[in-house]
Structure formats: structure tokens, C-alpha cells
Length: 196
Image (tube, rainbow, N blue to C red):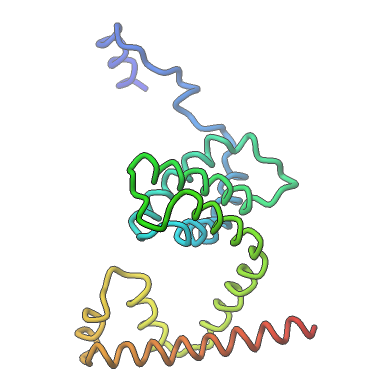
């Protein structure tokens, strides 16, 4: 406070925003509860619409800001994740349009179509994601470590092979085996769910 008042006096001619503009609403907990639960789903949605992870990261950051700014428009009886994905789609279009990053065959119409298709399959995709997490819990620690190294870090297959002391081909074979186990586990759970 003291520093701010000195700064205001020193730069009296400069327009400072009112304190209310600088501060978020006092109770931001509802937003954080919705946001933290929806974050992984919204990020996956964004990543399905953009060509690179760096683009997805940028769009997620922009989307987070817009969600915060528009949270007072959110109706609690709606699904926050779907609402957030709708906003994310608009942000994807805006970011790619500004940067002229549409690639051949990956234009605005295709992004709209992908978005519509993903929305139609939203519940199925979320159920499969739930089952994926359950199935990953059945893997041994070595397999989990390899998945994490390959998918959640900037490491390449070559980097992973060097760390594990094996060939890149061996890494791909291990990943193929793990993917097959996960796929079979998810399909089994989906079948059990349909029969229940």
C-alpha cells in the first residue's frame, strides 16, 4: 500500500486503474473449483483442435483468462466443462486467425467441424478418459514411468532410449505393448459399462 501511494504521488499525471479493477472478486473459490476440475478436459479439447502442443499451451492460457473474465456469465445449472470448451473453440479460432497459423487442409471450417464432432462424443470421450485413468492405475511403475517420460515431458523417443539404456526401437515396442494393454482394459470396461 505504501509503495502504491508513493507511486501514485510520483506519477500523478498517469492514469492508474481503480483498485477494484486490479482485484478479483473476493470469493473466487467457485471459479477455482470449476476450473480445476475442468482444466484437463479443456486442455485435451484444445489440443484436439490445434496442430502443436505449444499452440495448445498458448490457447489454454488465453482461454483461462477469458473464462475468468466471463465467469459471472456462467449459469451454475450448466456444465462448466462444456461451457469452457465452447469458449476455448472461439479462442482457438481467434489465436490461429491472428497468427495466420492455419495450415493447409486445417482451416476454420475444419476446426468448427472437429469441435462439433467432439461435442457430440463428449460423454463417451469423458468416460473413456475416466477408464484410461483407472487402467493406468493397473500398470506397473516401470510402465507408468515410461508413459510419463514419453508423453508428459519434452523428451523424444531417442532421449527416452538413452535414459533407459536401450534402443529407440525398443522404446516404441514397449510403448506399443503398454498402449495395447490400456486399449484392451478400456474396451473391457466399456463393455462392462454397456452391460450394466
